[in-house]
Length: 170
Image (tube, rainbow, N blue to C red; front, side):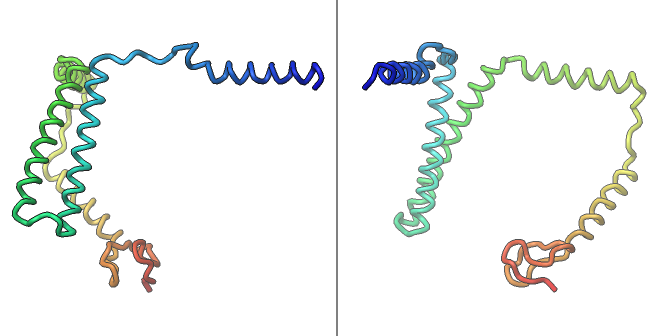
């Protein structure tokens, strides 16, 4: 090997090493807080609970679980999942701040004030609202052509084939 090839190899290895080591050198990632760790742990526990519930349902479908035990086990899993969701909601509420409701109320109140200032206080009467609903329902019925004779899925007037099973709709 000549000297140029050795220098070229060293340069390529140096560049590859710098590229691979870049994330370790820069340390751009943000530090995880204890709240982030708690949230991550709760999400992992929630995923495990959902998987366990799906497996329980699947095992019940296959007949691996006695019929009298299934409702009790499912209820216990649902209670546990509800507790996890409540913890997640509480953690998200603490992350977002305790004054989230007051900020929402202030935003709604400011919009009401803006609407009153612009003179947009005209309300829609009940009769007008009923007319609008009837027109909307009529428009939706015109779009639907009924159901597929093979699979029973909803088909539209513009459909030439069933979007679900592919049956020709002539």
